[in-house]
Length: 255
Image (cartoon, rainbow, N blue to C red):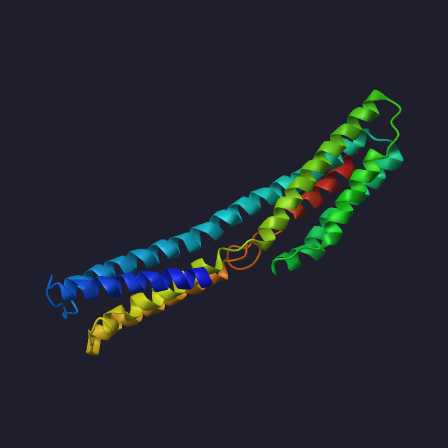
């Protein structure tokens, strides 16, 4: 934050110094007109800066939400594939692995998802994945078929663990705080700029400014509201995991 303040101070200092130097050497002419070149240039650049910051603040969470939604599909599908592959394991181990997968997916839906709206995850989820991996790894194989099934289950559990690690990152990811501050600050300046430039709108001419302020206020609130992937209007839900639970029930009923 100190670096940001120094950068702003340096930029303002450059403008003040340039204005002083040009005044001293007698270059240019006074520009007190609210519609003059100085105001027009500053207004255009401020509008462009706000649009750039606003676009980034909207696009980054939107893209992140889409990526996180795809990742939940990957994680849930890995659980389903592991559930299928467990069919080749000995009966006792198969039932234990499948029970562990059902418990894990149910835990994600019921217990962990509400936490992710706050940017956190429950470490118990990782412990459950590790327990599954340990359980399958410790299986003493007596045939090539069982060994192949064991390798397949381990591969799918590994995919599940990798997708879970990405979900943990997604849950805590937010746009840079400076970007949201820049969006809000530039939006306020854009609204107040005509007044700062010396214009004094009266009567009906105030209505466009009020409409602009309302729209910018809504846009800035929206950038704050979609900061987290698993909370707000763009929130990614546990639909993929609920579908996995239904698939588990279908597979068990068909085996």
